[in-house]
Image 1 (cartoon, rainbow, N blue to C red):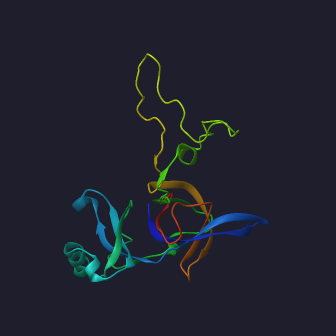
Image 2 (cartoon, rainbow, N blue to C red):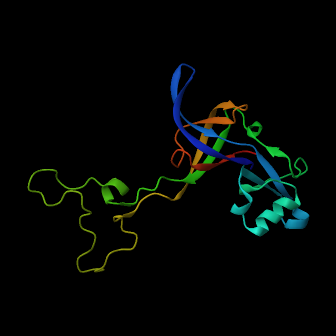
Image 3 (tube, rainbow, N blue to C red):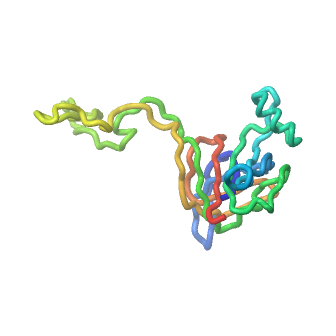
Length: 206
């Protein structure tokens, strides 16, 4: 499977066959192959791709030396993609939106928005208690334990806590628009993260 790293620009809508479709707009800058791994030497076939230009001082010395050895400028992100055949790839080749076509199915992963400490109604969509005047049970959890047996709170009980800022993968999103000159790709539906966050786009079926 081959993929790209892209920046989330936001959401919009595109008309497809006369119907308005909600889409997420992503900017996917081309990546550069920094290493080709082969089964005979490394145990599996894969290519390592560098994305997003950065400054030298933002990388560790081993990372910087590795890229200098193959004459590739400093890259912020290095991603590895498993492929069946590496004969079509070589170091310093570009990987860009040409690997996608309109109608392709992709998986997109990224970190969700961090929402801090949240209660059960926001975190787990609990209904809460009565909304009438005098009710002392409004937005709380409610009963969480048992009576005599087992006499404790069961592990995994849904309770208030940290909400968001976790890695999530949205599967089977459809590519509905491509602008290869501006490095833009639009997929049907929502993707994780805030505007400006980076996500991984993985093409299925390669």
